[in-house]
Amino acid sequence: MKNRNIFKKLSTFQLIILGFFGTILLGALLLMLPISSRAGEWTDFGSSLFTATSAVCVTGLIVHDTATHWSYFGQAIILLLIQIGGLGVITVAAFFAAISGRKISLMYRSVLQDSISAPQIGGVIRMTGFIFKAAFVLEFVGALMLMPTFCSKFGAEGIWMSFFHSISAFCNAGFDIMGGKSGEFTSLTAFSGDPAVVLPICFLIISGGIGFLTWEDIMKKKFKIREYRMQSKVILATSAIIIIIPMFIMFVMDFGDYPLKERLCLSFFQSVTPRTAGFNTADLTAMTSTGKLLIMVLMLIGGSPGSTAGGMKTTTVTVLMAETFSVFRRKKSAKLFGRRLEDGVGKSAAAILVMYLFLAVTAALIISGIENVAVDTCLFETASAIGTAGLSLGLTSTLGNVSRLILIGLMFFGRVGGLTVMYAAISSNGMEVSKYPVEKIAVG
Image (cartoon, rainbow, N blue to C red; front, side):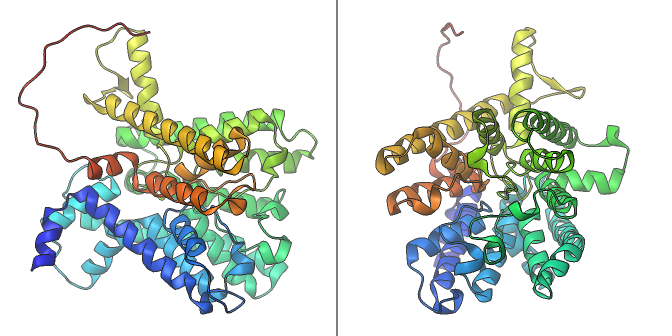
Protein backbone atom coordinates (compact mmCIF):
# COMPACT_ATOMS: atom_id res chain seq x y z
CA MET A 1 0.00 0.00 0.00
CA LYS A 2 2.83 2.39 0.86
CA ASN A 3 4.45 1.79 -2.54
CA ARG A 4 1.16 2.56 -4.29
CA ASN A 5 0.79 5.80 -2.35
CA ILE A 6 4.33 6.80 -3.29
CA PHE A 7 3.64 6.25 -7.00
CA LYS A 8 0.39 8.21 -6.76
CA LYS A 9 2.34 11.21 -5.48
CA LEU A 10 4.70 11.12 -8.47
CA SER A 11 3.87 13.11 -11.58
CA THR A 12 3.51 11.38 -14.94
CA PHE A 13 6.85 12.84 -16.03
CA GLN A 14 8.59 11.50 -12.92
CA LEU A 15 7.15 8.03 -13.57
CA ILE A 16 8.45 8.09 -17.15
CA ILE A 17 11.94 9.01 -15.91
CA LEU A 18 11.87 6.29 -13.24
CA GLY A 19 10.84 3.73 -15.87
CA PHE A 20 13.79 4.60 -18.11
CA PHE A 21 16.22 4.76 -15.19
CA GLY A 22 15.14 1.38 -13.82
CA THR A 23 15.49 -0.29 -17.22
CA ILE A 24 18.97 1.20 -17.71
CA LEU A 25 20.14 0.03 -14.28
CA LEU A 26 18.84 -3.52 -14.82
CA GLY A 27 20.43 -3.62 -18.28
CA ALA A 28 23.78 -2.44 -16.88
CA LEU A 29 23.75 -5.19 -14.21
CA LEU A 30 23.04 -7.85 -16.85
CA LEU A 31 25.80 -6.57 -19.13
CA MET A 32 28.30 -6.75 -16.28
CA LEU A 33 27.92 -10.54 -16.06
CA PRO A 34 30.70 -12.76 -17.52
CA ILE A 35 28.14 -14.44 -19.80
CA SER A 36 27.60 -11.07 -21.54
CA SER A 37 31.19 -10.70 -22.76
CA ARG A 38 33.03 -12.79 -25.35
CA ALA A 39 35.99 -13.17 -23.02
CA GLY A 40 33.74 -14.61 -20.29
CA GLU A 41 34.93 -11.95 -17.86
CA TRP A 42 33.16 -9.31 -15.79
CA THR A 43 32.68 -5.95 -17.53
CA ASP A 44 33.18 -2.91 -15.33
CA PHE A 45 30.04 -1.12 -14.17
CA GLY A 46 30.98 2.16 -15.86
CA SER A 47 31.23 0.60 -19.33
CA SER A 48 28.09 -1.48 -18.77
CA LEU A 49 26.14 1.56 -17.58
CA PHE A 50 27.26 3.59 -20.59
CA THR A 51 26.28 0.81 -23.01
CA ALA A 52 22.90 0.22 -21.33
CA THR A 53 22.14 3.95 -21.34
CA SER A 54 23.11 4.22 -25.00
CA ALA A 55 20.89 1.22 -25.85
CA VAL A 56 17.79 2.27 -23.86
CA CYS A 57 18.18 5.86 -25.05
CA VAL A 58 18.64 4.49 -28.61
CA THR A 59 21.80 6.51 -29.12
CA GLY A 60 24.52 4.21 -30.41
CA LEU A 61 27.56 5.76 -28.76
CA ILE A 62 29.76 2.92 -27.48
CA VAL A 63 32.93 2.41 -25.46
CA HIS A 64 33.38 -1.23 -26.57
CA ASP A 65 32.80 -2.54 -30.08
CA THR A 66 29.47 -4.38 -29.92
CA ALA A 67 30.54 -7.35 -32.05
CA THR A 68 33.97 -8.02 -30.57
CA HIS A 69 33.35 -7.29 -26.87
CA TRP A 70 29.85 -8.62 -26.23
CA SER A 71 28.80 -12.27 -26.57
CA TYR A 72 25.60 -13.31 -28.31
CA PHE A 73 23.90 -13.13 -24.92
CA GLY A 74 25.23 -9.61 -24.39
CA GLN A 75 24.16 -8.59 -27.89
CA ALA A 76 20.68 -10.01 -27.22
CA ILE A 77 20.45 -7.96 -24.00
CA ILE A 78 21.52 -4.83 -25.91
CA LEU A 79 18.95 -5.55 -28.63
CA LEU A 80 16.21 -6.03 -26.02
CA LEU A 81 17.16 -2.72 -24.38
CA ILE A 82 17.08 -1.04 -27.79
CA GLN A 83 13.60 -2.42 -28.48
CA ILE A 84 12.29 -1.32 -25.07
CA GLY A 85 13.90 2.09 -25.38
CA GLY A 86 12.71 2.61 -28.93
CA LEU A 87 9.09 1.75 -28.23
CA GLY A 88 9.19 3.40 -24.80
CA VAL A 89 9.45 1.77 -21.37
CA ILE A 90 5.94 2.86 -20.40
CA THR A 91 4.52 1.67 -23.73
CA VAL A 92 6.08 -1.78 -23.34
CA ALA A 93 4.77 -2.11 -19.78
CA ALA A 94 1.27 -1.06 -20.88
CA PHE A 95 1.27 -3.53 -23.76
CA PHE A 96 2.11 -6.52 -21.55
CA ALA A 97 -0.39 -5.36 -18.93
CA ALA A 98 -3.09 -5.17 -21.61
CA ILE A 99 -2.42 -8.62 -23.12
CA SER A 100 -2.33 -10.16 -19.62
CA GLY A 101 -5.86 -8.85 -19.04
CA ARG A 102 -4.97 -6.46 -16.24
CA LYS A 103 -7.07 -3.33 -15.84
CA ILE A 104 -5.09 -0.20 -16.64
CA SER A 105 -5.85 2.70 -14.33
CA LEU A 106 -6.67 6.23 -15.46
CA MET A 107 -3.41 7.48 -13.91
CA TYR A 108 -1.37 4.98 -15.93
CA ARG A 109 -3.28 5.92 -19.10
CA SER A 110 -2.30 9.53 -18.44
CA VAL A 111 1.36 8.50 -18.09
CA LEU A 112 1.06 6.53 -21.33
CA GLN A 113 -0.45 9.51 -23.11
CA ASP A 114 2.56 11.67 -22.23
CA SER A 115 4.95 8.84 -23.10
CA ILE A 116 3.69 8.34 -26.66
CA SER A 117 2.77 12.01 -27.24
CA ALA A 118 -0.86 11.09 -27.88
CA PRO A 119 -3.24 14.03 -28.47
CA GLN A 120 -5.83 12.68 -26.01
CA ILE A 121 -6.13 10.05 -23.30
CA GLY A 122 -8.93 8.20 -25.08
CA GLY A 123 -7.68 5.35 -27.25
CA VAL A 124 -4.13 5.21 -25.82
CA ILE A 125 -4.38 1.47 -25.10
CA ARG A 126 -5.52 0.79 -28.67
CA MET A 127 -2.67 3.00 -29.86
CA THR A 128 -0.22 0.90 -27.84
CA GLY A 129 -1.34 -2.20 -29.71
CA PHE A 130 -0.94 -0.41 -33.03
CA ILE A 131 2.61 0.70 -32.05
CA PHE A 132 3.68 -2.88 -31.39
CA LYS A 133 2.11 -4.25 -34.56
CA ALA A 134 3.60 -1.52 -36.74
CA ALA A 135 7.05 -1.87 -35.15
CA PHE A 136 7.25 -5.64 -35.49
CA VAL A 137 5.91 -5.68 -39.06
CA LEU A 138 8.35 -2.99 -40.23
CA GLU A 139 11.28 -4.60 -38.41
CA PHE A 140 10.47 -8.01 -39.88
CA VAL A 141 10.15 -6.59 -43.39
CA GLY A 142 13.44 -4.73 -42.90
CA ALA A 143 15.19 -7.93 -41.80
CA LEU A 144 13.88 -9.78 -44.88
CA MET A 145 15.22 -6.97 -47.10
CA LEU A 146 18.68 -7.24 -45.52
CA MET A 147 18.92 -11.05 -45.46
CA PRO A 148 19.91 -11.67 -49.11
CA THR A 149 22.98 -9.45 -48.76
CA PHE A 150 23.98 -10.44 -45.23
CA CYS A 151 23.39 -14.18 -45.70
CA SER A 152 25.34 -14.27 -48.95
CA LYS A 153 28.23 -12.48 -47.24
CA PHE A 154 28.16 -13.97 -43.73
CA GLY A 155 26.30 -17.27 -44.13
CA ALA A 156 23.77 -18.39 -41.51
CA GLU A 157 24.96 -15.68 -39.13
CA GLY A 158 23.50 -13.20 -41.60
CA ILE A 159 20.02 -14.02 -40.25
CA TRP A 160 20.95 -12.77 -36.77
CA MET A 161 22.74 -9.79 -38.26
CA SER A 162 19.70 -8.92 -40.39
CA PHE A 163 17.33 -8.86 -37.43
CA PHE A 164 19.83 -7.05 -35.20
CA HIS A 165 20.44 -4.24 -37.69
CA SER A 166 16.77 -4.02 -38.68
CA ILE A 167 15.64 -3.50 -35.07
CA SER A 168 18.56 -1.17 -34.38
CA ALA A 169 17.73 0.91 -37.47
CA PHE A 170 13.98 1.10 -36.86
CA CYS A 171 14.57 2.12 -33.24
CA ASN A 172 17.08 4.72 -34.48
CA ALA A 173 19.72 3.18 -32.20
CA GLY A 174 22.72 2.84 -34.52
CA PHE A 175 24.24 -0.21 -32.79
CA ASP A 176 25.92 -2.57 -35.26
CA ILE A 177 27.68 -5.93 -35.06
CA MET A 178 29.98 -5.50 -38.04
CA GLY A 179 33.11 -5.12 -35.89
CA GLY A 180 34.14 -8.74 -36.15
CA LYS A 181 33.75 -8.73 -39.95
CA SER A 182 35.08 -5.41 -41.21
CA GLY A 183 37.01 -4.03 -38.21
CA GLU A 184 36.05 -2.45 -34.89
CA PHE A 185 33.95 0.73 -34.88
CA THR A 186 33.50 0.62 -38.67
CA SER A 187 29.68 0.61 -38.63
CA LEU A 188 28.32 0.03 -42.18
CA THR A 189 31.25 1.53 -44.10
CA ALA A 190 31.80 -1.79 -45.91
CA PHE A 191 28.42 -1.27 -47.62
CA SER A 192 28.81 2.42 -48.50
CA GLY A 193 27.85 1.92 -52.16
CA ASP A 194 25.48 -1.02 -51.80
CA PRO A 195 21.82 0.02 -52.32
CA ALA A 196 20.67 -3.39 -51.02
CA VAL A 197 21.86 -2.33 -47.54
CA VAL A 198 21.70 1.48 -47.74
CA LEU A 199 18.08 1.71 -48.87
CA PRO A 200 16.55 -0.77 -46.35
CA ILE A 201 18.46 0.81 -43.45
CA CYS A 202 17.37 4.31 -44.52
CA PHE A 203 13.77 3.08 -44.93
CA LEU A 204 13.83 1.71 -41.38
CA ILE A 205 15.40 4.85 -39.90
CA ILE A 206 12.81 7.10 -41.55
CA SER A 207 9.96 4.73 -40.64
CA GLY A 208 10.88 4.74 -36.98
CA GLY A 209 11.62 8.47 -36.94
CA ILE A 210 8.36 9.86 -38.31
CA GLY A 211 6.30 8.67 -35.33
CA PHE A 212 3.47 6.21 -34.83
CA LEU A 213 0.71 8.85 -34.98
CA THR A 214 1.93 9.69 -38.47
CA TRP A 215 1.88 6.01 -39.39
CA GLU A 216 -1.68 5.79 -38.08
CA ASP A 217 -2.68 8.60 -40.46
CA ILE A 218 -0.89 6.87 -43.34
CA MET A 219 -2.57 3.52 -42.62
CA LYS A 220 -6.06 4.96 -42.16
CA LYS A 221 -6.17 7.70 -44.78
CA LYS A 222 -3.68 6.35 -47.31
CA PHE A 223 -3.01 9.02 -49.97
CA LYS A 224 -5.67 11.47 -48.70
CA ILE A 225 -2.98 13.73 -47.29
CA ARG A 226 -5.37 16.65 -46.82
CA GLU A 227 -7.19 14.60 -44.17
CA TYR A 228 -4.02 13.98 -42.14
CA ARG A 229 -3.48 15.66 -38.79
CA MET A 230 -1.61 18.94 -39.07
CA GLN A 231 1.18 17.35 -37.03
CA SER A 232 1.54 14.51 -39.54
CA LYS A 233 1.72 16.98 -42.43
CA VAL A 234 4.39 18.99 -40.61
CA ILE A 235 6.41 15.86 -39.83
CA LEU A 236 6.32 14.51 -43.39
CA ALA A 237 7.10 17.88 -45.00
CA THR A 238 9.90 18.75 -42.57
CA SER A 239 11.42 15.26 -42.79
CA ALA A 240 11.52 15.47 -46.59
CA ILE A 241 13.14 18.93 -46.52
CA ILE A 242 15.87 18.04 -44.00
CA ILE A 243 16.75 14.92 -45.98
CA ILE A 244 16.79 16.38 -49.51
CA ILE A 245 18.66 19.64 -48.81
CA PRO A 246 21.51 18.09 -46.74
CA MET A 247 21.79 15.28 -49.28
CA PHE A 248 22.34 17.81 -52.08
CA ILE A 249 24.92 19.76 -50.03
CA MET A 250 26.89 16.62 -49.13
CA PHE A 251 26.68 15.34 -52.71
CA VAL A 252 28.31 18.56 -53.92
CA MET A 253 30.82 19.19 -51.12
CA ASP A 254 31.86 15.91 -49.51
CA PHE A 255 31.71 12.94 -51.86
CA GLY A 256 32.83 14.32 -55.22
CA ASP A 257 35.66 11.77 -55.60
CA TYR A 258 33.34 8.73 -55.56
CA PRO A 259 31.57 7.04 -58.52
CA LEU A 260 28.04 8.35 -59.08
CA LYS A 261 26.16 5.38 -57.53
CA GLU A 262 28.31 5.34 -54.38
CA ARG A 263 28.21 9.13 -54.22
CA LEU A 264 24.40 9.06 -54.22
CA CYS A 265 24.31 6.30 -51.59
CA LEU A 266 26.79 8.12 -49.34
CA SER A 267 24.98 11.46 -49.62
CA PHE A 268 21.56 9.95 -48.99
CA PHE A 269 22.68 7.81 -46.07
CA GLN A 270 24.60 10.61 -44.33
CA SER A 271 21.56 12.91 -44.64
CA VAL A 272 19.26 10.28 -43.07
CA THR A 273 21.38 8.71 -40.34
CA PRO A 274 22.03 11.89 -38.26
CA ARG A 275 18.31 11.90 -37.49
CA THR A 276 19.34 9.99 -34.30
CA ALA A 277 20.16 6.69 -36.06
CA GLY A 278 23.92 6.49 -35.47
CA PHE A 279 25.03 4.31 -38.39
CA ASN A 280 27.55 5.65 -40.87
CA THR A 281 28.82 4.50 -44.24
CA ALA A 282 31.49 7.21 -44.58
CA ASP A 283 34.56 8.20 -42.59
CA LEU A 284 33.12 11.17 -40.72
CA THR A 285 36.56 12.47 -39.73
CA ALA A 286 37.37 12.93 -43.44
CA MET A 287 34.30 15.05 -44.15
CA THR A 288 34.53 18.80 -44.65
CA SER A 289 33.82 21.23 -41.82
CA THR A 290 30.56 22.11 -43.58
CA GLY A 291 29.54 18.47 -43.66
CA LYS A 292 30.33 17.94 -39.97
CA LEU A 293 28.44 21.09 -38.98
CA LEU A 294 25.45 20.01 -41.06
CA ILE A 295 25.46 16.61 -39.36
CA MET A 296 25.58 18.27 -35.92
CA VAL A 297 22.53 20.37 -36.78
CA LEU A 298 20.65 17.30 -38.02
CA MET A 299 21.59 15.36 -34.87
CA LEU A 300 20.17 18.09 -32.67
CA ILE A 301 16.93 18.23 -34.68
CA GLY A 302 16.43 14.47 -34.42
CA GLY A 303 13.19 12.68 -35.25
CA SER A 304 9.53 13.39 -34.57
CA PRO A 305 7.23 13.23 -31.52
CA GLY A 306 5.92 9.80 -30.57
CA SER A 307 8.67 8.07 -32.57
CA THR A 308 11.64 5.87 -31.75
CA ALA A 309 13.96 8.85 -32.28
CA GLY A 310 15.25 11.51 -29.91
CA GLY A 311 16.50 15.05 -30.42
CA MET A 312 14.61 18.34 -30.33
CA LYS A 313 12.10 16.94 -32.85
CA THR A 314 11.13 18.09 -36.34
CA THR A 315 7.96 19.75 -35.09
CA THR A 316 9.96 21.92 -32.67
CA VAL A 317 12.06 23.32 -35.50
CA THR A 318 9.04 23.88 -37.75
CA VAL A 319 7.11 25.65 -34.99
CA LEU A 320 10.08 27.95 -34.37
CA MET A 321 10.28 28.78 -38.08
CA ALA A 322 6.53 29.43 -38.22
CA GLU A 323 6.70 31.69 -35.17
CA THR A 324 9.65 33.54 -36.69
CA PHE A 325 7.82 34.20 -39.96
CA SER A 326 4.73 35.33 -38.05
CA VAL A 327 6.88 37.94 -36.27
CA PHE A 328 8.40 39.09 -39.57
CA ARG A 329 4.92 39.42 -41.08
CA ARG A 330 3.57 41.09 -37.90
CA LYS A 331 0.90 38.45 -37.40
CA LYS A 332 -0.57 37.73 -33.97
CA SER A 333 -0.28 33.96 -34.33
CA ALA A 334 1.66 31.45 -36.41
CA LYS A 335 -0.09 29.22 -38.95
CA LEU A 336 0.77 25.90 -40.56
CA PHE A 337 -1.23 24.09 -43.25
CA GLY A 338 -4.25 26.32 -42.74
CA ARG A 339 -4.29 25.89 -38.96
CA ARG A 340 -3.39 28.35 -36.21
CA LEU A 341 -0.86 27.14 -33.64
CA GLU A 342 -2.10 27.08 -30.06
CA ASP A 343 -0.85 29.73 -27.66
CA GLY A 344 2.27 28.72 -25.77
CA VAL A 345 3.61 26.13 -28.22
CA GLY A 346 6.16 28.65 -29.51
CA LYS A 347 7.42 29.23 -25.96
CA SER A 348 7.83 25.49 -25.43
CA ALA A 349 9.72 25.14 -28.72
CA ALA A 350 12.03 28.05 -27.84
CA ALA A 351 12.67 26.58 -24.38
CA ILE A 352 13.61 23.21 -25.91
CA LEU A 353 16.01 24.87 -28.38
CA VAL A 354 17.71 26.87 -25.63
CA MET A 355 18.03 23.79 -23.38
CA TYR A 356 19.57 21.61 -26.08
CA LEU A 357 22.03 24.25 -27.28
CA PHE A 358 23.03 25.24 -23.74
CA LEU A 359 23.59 21.65 -22.58
CA ALA A 360 25.43 20.56 -25.73
CA VAL A 361 27.79 23.56 -25.73
CA THR A 362 28.37 23.54 -21.95
CA ALA A 363 29.08 19.80 -21.93
CA ALA A 364 31.48 20.21 -24.88
CA LEU A 365 33.40 22.94 -23.07
CA ILE A 366 33.67 20.84 -19.90
CA ILE A 367 34.80 17.70 -21.76
CA SER A 368 37.28 19.77 -23.80
CA GLY A 369 38.79 21.09 -20.57
CA ILE A 370 38.95 17.67 -18.93
CA GLU A 371 40.25 15.70 -21.92
CA ASN A 372 42.33 18.47 -23.55
CA VAL A 373 40.58 17.91 -26.90
CA ALA A 374 39.44 20.50 -29.44
CA VAL A 375 36.03 21.97 -28.61
CA ASP A 376 34.58 21.31 -32.06
CA THR A 377 35.36 17.59 -31.74
CA CYS A 378 33.77 17.51 -28.28
CA LEU A 379 30.73 19.42 -29.57
CA PHE A 380 30.19 16.75 -32.21
CA GLU A 381 30.08 14.06 -29.49
CA THR A 382 27.82 16.06 -27.15
CA ALA A 383 25.43 16.93 -29.98
CA SER A 384 25.38 13.25 -30.88
CA ALA A 385 24.63 12.28 -27.27
CA ILE A 386 21.86 14.79 -26.55
CA GLY A 387 20.37 14.19 -30.00
CA THR A 388 20.61 10.41 -29.33
CA ALA A 389 22.28 10.08 -32.72
CA GLY A 390 25.29 7.94 -31.84
CA LEU A 391 27.59 9.26 -34.56
CA SER A 392 31.15 9.80 -33.39
CA LEU A 393 34.48 11.15 -34.53
CA GLY A 394 36.16 8.41 -32.48
CA LEU A 395 36.37 10.38 -29.23
CA THR A 396 33.83 8.57 -27.04
CA SER A 397 35.80 5.33 -26.61
CA THR A 398 38.85 7.29 -25.36
CA LEU A 399 37.05 9.41 -22.74
CA GLY A 400 37.55 9.20 -18.99
CA ASN A 401 34.84 8.34 -16.46
CA VAL A 402 33.73 11.93 -15.77
CA SER A 403 33.30 12.72 -19.46
CA ARG A 404 31.39 9.47 -19.96
CA LEU A 405 29.05 10.38 -17.12
CA ILE A 406 28.38 13.71 -18.84
CA LEU A 407 27.48 11.89 -22.07
CA ILE A 408 25.26 9.47 -20.12
CA GLY A 409 23.34 12.44 -18.73
CA LEU A 410 22.98 13.97 -22.18
CA MET A 411 21.74 10.70 -23.71
CA PHE A 412 19.16 10.29 -20.97
CA PHE A 413 18.01 13.90 -21.36
CA GLY A 414 17.78 13.56 -25.13
CA ARG A 415 15.72 10.35 -25.12
CA VAL A 416 13.33 11.06 -22.25
CA GLY A 417 12.75 14.58 -23.57
CA GLY A 418 13.84 18.00 -22.41
CA LEU A 419 10.43 19.14 -21.21
CA THR A 420 9.77 15.81 -19.48
CA VAL A 421 12.97 16.21 -17.46
CA MET A 422 12.19 19.82 -16.61
CA TYR A 423 8.57 19.11 -15.65
CA ALA A 424 9.73 16.21 -13.47
CA ALA A 425 12.41 18.28 -11.75
CA ILE A 426 10.42 21.47 -11.24
CA SER A 427 7.15 21.14 -9.37
CA SER A 428 4.19 23.29 -10.37
CA ASN A 429 1.99 25.04 -7.87
CA GLY A 430 -1.02 24.91 -10.14
CA MET A 431 -2.64 27.56 -12.27
CA GLU A 432 -1.39 31.11 -12.17
CA VAL A 433 -4.11 33.17 -10.49
CA SER A 434 -2.35 36.52 -10.46
CA LYS A 435 -0.30 38.48 -12.96
CA TYR A 436 2.57 40.88 -12.51
CA PRO A 437 2.44 44.38 -14.02
CA VAL A 438 3.56 44.62 -17.66
CA GLU A 439 6.63 46.60 -18.69
CA LYS A 440 8.10 46.72 -22.18
CA ILE A 441 11.60 45.55 -23.01
CA ALA A 442 13.34 46.06 -26.36
CA VAL A 443 14.62 43.00 -28.22
CA GLY A 444 16.43 42.65 -31.54
